[in-house]
Structure formats: structure tokens, C-alpha cells
Length: 142
Image (cartoon, rainbow, N blue to C red; front, side):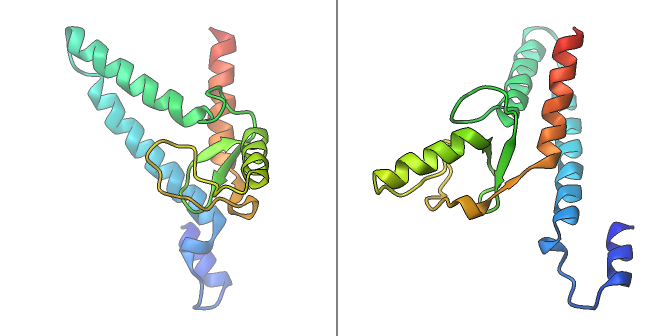
């Protein structure tokens, strides 16, 4: 429906891959699908099921924590090139320090091949922000 409504209000040159609302929506759907797949891993029995649960939980934790600070992010900034997210203050400090040392700025996520991070590549991630706030509420209510 979003795409159809957008097509009615714009000309035929509309590019959904460049529309931030569409990209956020698509990412949200992907997250829901991945969560469903993760839930199916939890259906195992005994020690194997517990181990899979730990793996799924740790993977979920990693997406909400900054790779630089390893703590839950407060203001997540998503890299438009590689899609990784970082705490705003941590990534800005990282970029500043690397520039002072005249070093290339490589994404701090292990295994990522993005070696050219610029402040302009970063944008606030409202979808991740909502997930983080939801996690904070869960932690304070339990």
C-alpha cells in the first residue's frame, strides 16, 4: 500500500530503494522475518535448545549494542553504505581520532569490508531506536 500510494503522488521516476520510509519499512519486515526464524530455533529440546536460545539471544544483543562501546546504544546511527549501526557519540569520536591519525576509517564491525566511513554516511536509525527503547522498557519492568 505504501508503494502504491507513493506511486500515485510522484512521477514514474520514483525509486523505492532511495525512499527512507520504504527502506525503514522493508528493514522492519526483514527483522520480523528473522525474528520468526530465530523463534523456530528455540523449539529444540534440552541442552541443544538452551544453547540455540543463547546464540539467538546473543545475536539480538549484538544488534542493539554499539560495536565500539559494547553497550546498549542510546542514539543509534546507521551507516548507509554497510548498514551497521553505532552509538552516535562513539562513532563520531572514532572518526575524529582516525582522521587525526590520518588513517582510513574502517567500519568497526568485525568482518565488514567498509573502509571508508564519513560522517555524511551516517543517519539516525529510528527503527533501531524503537527496538532499543523497547528493550530498555522490558529490562526496567522485569
